[in-house]
Length: 366
Image (cartoon, rainbow, N blue to C red; front, top):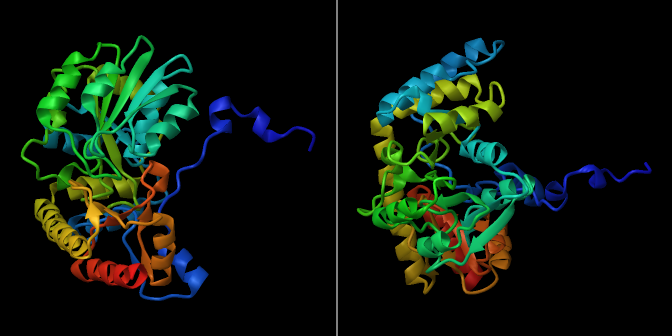
C-alpha cells in the first residue's frame, strides 16, 4: 500500500494514545492460568446493580430486536424528577465519557484552548487532542485541583475547563466555596464541565452538588454516571446536566440510540432504589477505612479520597509492584501515566477482597 493511513488522519488523532482500561480478569486468567482473581482496578461497585435494576434489565431483553427510545424519554423524566429540573436540561450518554466527548465535538476547534489539572482524568486530554484543541495543564496542589491557578490560566482562546470532583485517580475534591468562586470568575464564553462521576460516594461536608447551580450559571455542565455507585458499568449509561440551550447543542452531535434499551431501563430503576445506593455507600465507607488503616499499618502513604478508590504510594515504581501483584492474582491500577509513578490506585472492594490486596502487598513489598 503506497499511502500510509496515518497520514490521512487529522493531526490530533495521529498522535493520540488510546485510553488504557484496567486489565480484565479473563485476560489475566489466559496469561498466567490463575483462578480466584481479585480485580480492584476499574472503580466498579463490589455490590453490582440493585435488584430493581436487574429486573428492569431482564424485562428490556424481550425487546432486543427493536431500537431503543432515541430520546431516552423515561430516563430523562426520572432524572428530571430526581434533580428537580425539566427534561430539557439533560443529555444522555454511553457512560459519562460519551458526554465529555460531546462537549469537545460541540464546542471546540483547533483555535481553542482547554484547561484541566495535572493528575486529572485521562479522557480530558484525549477528547481535547482528538479535536485539535490546545491543552493547558495547570499544576496540581497537594495532588488536587488548584482552582485559583486554573482560573488565572483562562485566556482569550479558552473555551472549556474540566474539573473532576472528586478527581480520578487521586480522589481529591473541591470545596463548594472555591468552586463557586471559580464559576463566578469565569467569562461567560468559557464552559466549566464539572465531572461528578463519583458524586454518590462523597461524604465531605464542604462538597457541593453543582447540579443545583445550573439555574445560576448557563456556562456550567455537570456530568454523572451510573457506572460507579449504581453498579451498571457494563451497560454504559451516563448523562450531562446543563442549560437547555447547551443541552440542545450537545444533543445535536449525539449519535442516535447512543444509550441502549437495557441500559435505559436499568438506569431508570437504579435511580429509584435508594436502599441499594445506601448499601453501596456503606460498603465503600467501611472498605475505605479498611484500606487506609491497612496501608498506614504497612508504612504506606495514601492520598485522602472521596471516591471509591484509594491511591497508595508503594515507595517504588508502581508498574513493578503492579506486575508482582498480578502474579498474586490481584489486579489494581498503575497510574504512572497520570504523573504518579510510585502510586497504585486500588478500588474499594468487599472486606475479603480488600484483605487480599493488603496480604498480597505484604508479600510483594517485603
